[in-house]
Image 1 (cartoon, one colour):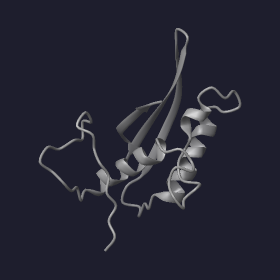
Image 2 (cartoon, helix red, strand yellow; image 1 turned 180 degrees about the vertical axis):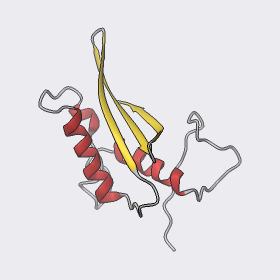
Image 3 (cartoon, rainbow, N blue to C red; image 1 turned 120 degrees about the horizontal axis):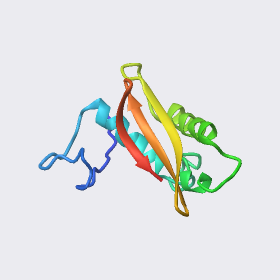
Image 4 (spheres, rainbow, N blue to C red; image 1 turned 180 degrees about the horizontal axis):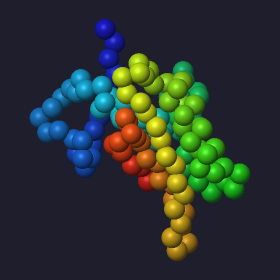
Length: 119
């Protein structure tokens, strides 16, 4: 049986001390989305299309929330196996303050926000 291994940093709220392996499907989906969002295309050997390149779109004027959501959805549909047990959705929003712009990606599983990403 093949297994995928993901590390949860200690700073993360989902970190469980003294736990080496999680077999919770929900945690696996969250970690797979984490990996997709923060991997640049071409960084995974033999999978040149894996990853979202989100930081590349942050200051592009031709991309909006709908286009970014579509990019993320295409990656989720291609690289994450969802058997229908969980419904996965994402929200994308651009946030501006002072002289900065950021992108916030919310991950919703079964209509409940389980993770937010600031890019």
